Amino acid sequence: MAQNGEWARHWRYPELPGLDLLRAHYIRHSFPRHAHEGYVIAAVTGGIEEVGLPGGTVRAGPGSVVLINPEVPHTARAGAPEGWAYATLYPSRELIAEVAAEIGSLRGTPGFTADSVTDPETSRLITRVHRAAEKGNALAADTLLRGAVARMLTRHAAPLPARPVRGAAAADAVRARAVLEERMAGPPSLEQLAAELGTSPFALLRAFRERYGMPPHTWLTDARVRRARRLLDAGTAPAEAALAVGFTDQPHLNRHFTRIVGVPPGAYRRERSGRAGG
Image (cartoon, rainbow, N blue to C red):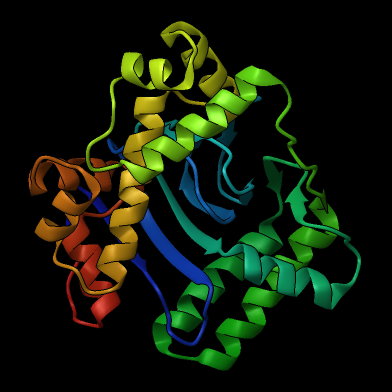
């Protein structure tokens, strides 16, 4: 994808299973609040990225590595007129667990303890992972990937604490999420959802925000895009994926997908199918 000075490539290298890759330069593009099923390890290579996290806003420049754990809601936008450029690794939970087991220094599910670190060496490793993958050098890409992940886990990780469901309000939020997952294509209104769960709309909204870091409608849009990604990965056409996940038409999918993933669904699908294009 290249437009108005912005460009992005979101893809998978088949020799690196459990990993998505994004290399991009964004100027006006901003990511709305969303979360990832896996981890984010991003090397900022130019400009300034502003990342909005539950604990506050992080400003990351060249030589910085941004670290985000699974299901942590966040936003991202340019923090300077020239925007920001970065090379991002999206490792799955399984890949992180595998590397953590290899280094043997962490017990339980690993979680990053820092949102952003100044580490030019790791930043260079991450960009070299991208270059090696783009050149089709599987040995180098895998070696560099494991080195970068191991370095971050060794220096900036600890066991991720479990989040037990405590109290009726938290339980209502979990049940509400399950309902929205199940009825994604035709979800109830907030009032209907609250009535089904035996609570009030305001109480449910407050509990959902506290549990998931965003209101139900924002979470639902993010969940729809996630499911659309899985459908596109499986070869489904964007128009079919749009209707399957509950968007009214393909333009609605295009808009939300591009904002959250960083590339349009057509470009995303072409990369998955191995055809050239962006």
